[in-house]
Length: 186
Ligand SMILES: Cc1cc2nc3c(=O)[nH]c(=O)nc-3n(C[C@H](O)[C@H](O)[C@H](O)COP(=O)(O)O)c2cc1C
Image (cartoon, rainbow, N blue to C red; front, side, top):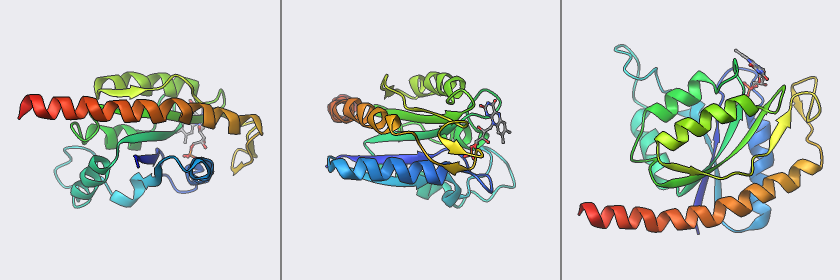
């Protein structure tokens, strides 16, 4: 079975990403088509990349966890029309661990996190992560109560499944790309 990491992009106190990630995981688990796992950046205490006095003890575990995965669903929140600094930092830490894998994006914000998603797509391209087109975009106004309690509209369930329908075959296909790159460099 393929391993798909559901990456929570925010780490701030009071964040809503765990609610969104748990909902995506439940929908994904119901499909029974892969091993889905929540990956919480906050668990790895990553200092800012290159910070001289930072405690980098979580970096090896972060690298190992991402290397174990075949594909990803990024849970993306919009911060100043882009992704969170925590997610950008966590992406910047690694390279080969991300390369030649596939990803889907589930975002939220006042306009569904659309602007953050477009920024993330550019970053994923640079990391050689194949990102699928279908993109569940959750509104802070209609899929949350008071912007804090997650209460998604029913239509979003179909959108998550449509995204996973694209992600699974792409994740499988990228396995053969990785096998080919490994054998070429051996
Ligand atoms: C620093 C900051 C900047 C934000 N900028 C935007 C923004 O540009 N567009 C938007 O739609 N929401 C913006 N928001 C609202 C967040 O998308 C919203 O608070 C969301 O819940 C953040 O995700 P989190 O709870 O998982 O941290 C911003 C929130 C913060 C904390």
